[in-house]
Length: 277
Image (cartoon, rainbow, N blue to C red):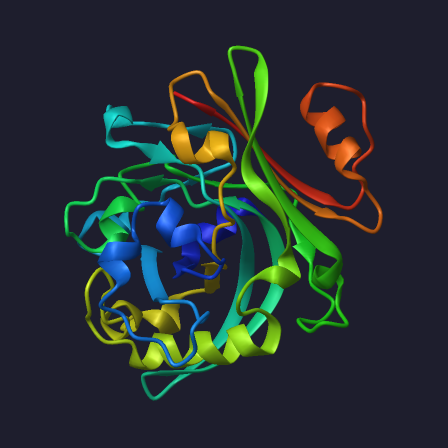
């Protein structure tokens, strides 16, 4: 699996899949119009990259080294540390029939935090190199609680002026509101049936060329923020670190030591390191 291949994937993300994230991101009011069947259910899905689309969504935004502000650093750019699921999918009769997660990786669904009433997708892709994914892509043995992902945690940090800060709260992947089979069934339903409402768009029109895509990249949702993350937006020169690591194999100290530049073996970890420019 090569990062270059992802240019031929559809890019979607899940909104509101961790408790408290939307409130901390200042988006709770915008999402108040979205009704969900269950209290803690995610709010919906949104596109961040659709190859060939005539809008800004046609720009490939993913990079493993930098986040470019494109002069928009005053619009409150924020890291969103997530698990990226790299999936095959079955599309028949203009419907998504199945989603098959094959690999996972550390992902930064970097976002603009200006509440301007526009669709969420407009805050997710503002040009090249505005998203992040690790080159360390890990194969999924099976997408269930018995599989490898059940052991992994998400951690994220910012290094600013030589000082390391927690950015997101370190969280078990299994603590997503929806994950594994429940998330898969929910995503299939949303891709086929989500309607235009509030900050979310009808998804079906973005799938009209789905048969030409190699697969679908899904950002599963961002963790809650630390106090520093809530109150500090990205500045040029910041270093971003997102780790998806096997917490049964690596300690949090292993992760922290690696980020601080110590020679640490991370054999079961997907690490993303980006510099804001």
